[in-house]
Amino acid sequence: MRVLTSGLAAPWEITWGPDELLWVTEREGPRILRVSAEDGSIVSAFTLPEVLQTSGQDGLLGLALHPDLLSDDSSPFVYVAYTYDADPGAGVDRRAKLRRFTFDLDEQVLGAPLDLLTELPASNDHNSGRLVLGPDARLYYTIGDQGSNQFSTVCNPNRAQQLPAAGEIAARDYTKYAGKILRIELDGSIPADNPVLAGVRSHIYSYGHRNAQGIAFAAGRLYADEHGPKSDDELNLITGGGNYGWPNVSGYLDGQAYVYADWSASAPTPCAELEYSDYVIPESVPISLETDFDAADFVPPLATFYTVPDDYVFRDPDCPRNDYICWPTIAPSSLDFYPAGSAVPGWASSLLLSSLKQGALFRARLSNDGQSIIGAIEPVLRTQNRYRDLAIQPGGAVIYIVTDPAGAMVGPGGGVSTETEQPGSILEFTLEGFSGG
Ligand SMILES: [Ca+2]
Ligand SMILES: [Ca+2]
Ligand SMILES: [Ca+2]
Image (cartoon, rainbow, N blue to C red; front, side):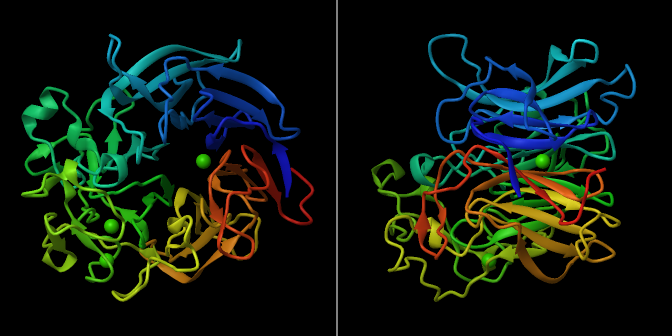
């Protein structure tokens, strides 16, 4: 491993480009960088002053490159997602948008900005924001549940199970896109073959997601990972029209170690008068059990990190300072596919999940039909860093990982550490014995 470059302002997406450069978004920059894979130098940098980056998890997020970026003059397009201020006045109305830029091949600059889809839900928490361009030439975009029903946004109703009415879509009211994966035409419109959900065709492809920060295609199938609450991070195979259960179900529909407590519906004590807790549900807050959830379209995960029994002790007495680090989760921040025929022996046809808490990629081998995971899911490429995203060089002998600038993770000997070794960096891992190519 070597540090390719450091000092980046919360690098969030890293993508191998057809120009053989690494395209990186800085969430806090907010910049789009093109970085040399040879010496880590910044070849070009584009600042996006229109990005709203204030607090928490907002800012410049996903990036996807058109596959014909360099190979023809008709589609030299770069797609980005970010949060912005939709209030023209003094107030702040945080929303998210998808914007397309045209990459000028001669000048090597981005220009001709075009908004594709605006006024999407945005928050300081659980924006998700991962963007990929699928083999069907559609954009896929993840929108989290906005952190609704927890912490400072605990009194906001969670909308991951809510589906929009026809009138809302006609009026471009995308409130109910929270907790969804969208499928979008390259001009921002609704694909004619998107699923019809509750009688309405919209940009929504799948629903019931908490915070799906990773999506990747593998052999034509779409996979996603998402952060769970105190357990049950998920790896999912995404199908059009699928319901992934949140907030009624976390992980498998097993009735273990999770109930949905809807704080927004607290009565007679209103939610605003309650003090949020990860452990204690006030009597005024209605709950529903996983086993009450009866949805024919429910899709269970392929794998979880980790499913625990009802008597699991989440409040670990040895972890008093920063409990979530000790919860049975890995905090999956992204996802990529390691194809068959690539360099690393034994890694063929694997999904790689980056972990914020564990400083590792979790490698999950797909079955031939892509419908299940084979064998144990193992952590690889460990360091003491929060991994935000990865990119794989064609051929698979070199893997790049971007790291968070700060934050907590599991320490070298267990427990909690806020000491990360290479913050705000691109780490480059090269297969031993590989001499370039
Ligand atoms: Ca990536
Ligand atoms: Ca789920
Ligand atoms: Ca469960």
